[in-house]
Image (cartoon, rainbow, N blue to C red; front, top):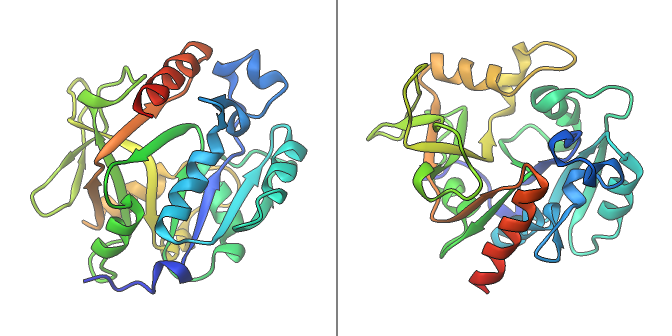
Length: 243
C-alpha cells in the first residue's frame, strides 16, 4: 500500500537542460525538449504523463537556449510549471535535481527525462508507481521497459529485476532485459549526502542499490528513444502508426 499523498498533491521535475548534441543541427536553434516528434514537442509527452496521473505541479530546468524553455513552460496554462535556472552551469541530472529541491518539497517526487517518449497502454505508469511506493523499503523506484520492444535503442539494457521488485545492474559484458525509461520516483532524503555542483543521478542509484532500496516497475506501453535526427523521423512514424 502506498505511503504517499494523493497524486494531486505530488510534484514532478522534467529534465530539460541538456545540450542535445547528437541532434545537431536541429538543436543548434531548438532545445532538445522542444524538438517536434509527430507534430508535438518532446516535453509535451512528459506533460501528458503528468496530466494522465493528475499531477498538476511541475519543475522544468533550463540551460541550452534557456529562454525558449522558459517561454514554452510559461505558455502551459493547465499545469503549475516552475523553471529552475541552470544557465550559469550545466549540473547534469543529479545536480539539476538537487538545485531544484526547494521547488520540489520534502516528499518523494517524480523525475522525467524529456529526451525520450513514454506512452502508456492502460493505466497511468505514474499512478502504478505511486501505488507501489513504500517509504520503509524504497529510496528510488525506476520505470523499466523491455529492451526487446524499445524503439530507437541499441544498448544492452540496464537492469535485472528481482521477484521482490529490487533491481540489480547488469555486469560488464552481459546484457540485461530491461532499460531505464527515464521516469523515476525519488526520495529527496538521499540527496543530503550528494556533492554540490554537477553529478549524475547514477550516484543516487548506487547509494540506493547498496542499501537494497532501489526498486523497479515494468512499463506497459511504448518507449521511444530520440537521440538523432534519424530517430526523430522513426519515432514520428511509429507514433503516427499508433493513432
